[in-house]
Length: 447
Image (cartoon, rainbow, N blue to C red; front, side, top):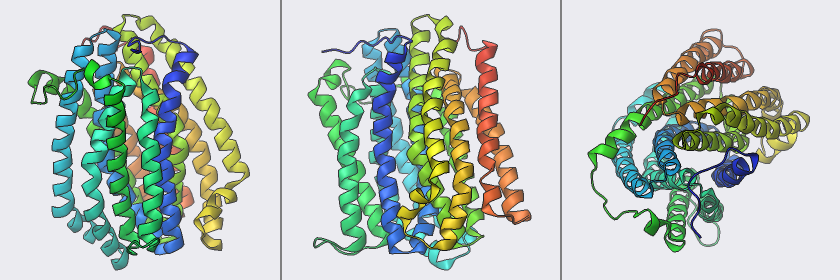
């Protein structure tokens, strides 16, 4: 059965698209948390180092996510216009560009990154572990990028239900190899911290392989002529570059600012770094709900504009925002009531538990603000004006970096105050995105 390419601005349609996206995003985050639980049982130092390596890898994952968001908006617009042939050409070009970016990222990690980490991380042990880990971990980036491009295709063509197959396969693989390679179980070598890197690469490859097998089996490859003309296409490359370029820089600087935050936290000791790593786990695991609805907003806003129904955009955003914030409100309440239940899974000491409990109360409220702001920000992307989202991100990042530098490095206050930066960051994104959408300046933009 061929899925309808054009969407309707209803709660049913939102849940139909957003539900599978949530599950697809949830599984990799679940893998990441399992990875950190295993490392927590290895040592506090391993858990602390994982905060640096994890955010570093997220920078390049964010580059792919920016490319994915722009490609998704383009595919959604062509779906709204009912142009399946154009969808295949866009996807092929997206994969081509992604591979070029992956090669550049691998080269950067081997040539430049060690010098940066040597000059910014105080602990020699953490520095040495981080560089060794990243030299392995970065090799999984090509698989991740192709995996992200399939997200753009399936979400943009209203077929997000197929996302789940690859993520389930990735999850099973990640848990198995984390357990066997970190601790040397079932006859596998004991690789410790680096075992987590190899496990992640294998899991990303398996996830990519399975989802493309599914795409071929259900006929999506044939319908959109995927990989039939896999060559440089300057027209579509320019389209993708114009829309995705600002998003790539937006996501890169956003996560670089997070890496800056973690480097400052490292100066406060291993416990502060370990606690902050678990907060990133929390943001990643529960934040997937918000990001799923944000991806839904990007796709659906672009689709209804492609149908020449611009009057539906703001009512549609409000419906998505209501669902996103409603679910996160429940999550936030539970985290405030039972913070130690979440923290106990990392098997750390009393100092970790006390500091973590204070920080988790701040993060739980920040999650609620994020659940609204991400929907509005990604709706701006859906209108086709990615330059605006870039400028919005820059404004929020400048304030964020100034705040965390003053709080953590100049005044040397607790990371509890440092994590309050999330309130300001997400509030700035929300207010500026809301203003742009309500201004109606996005109407009549053609691309």
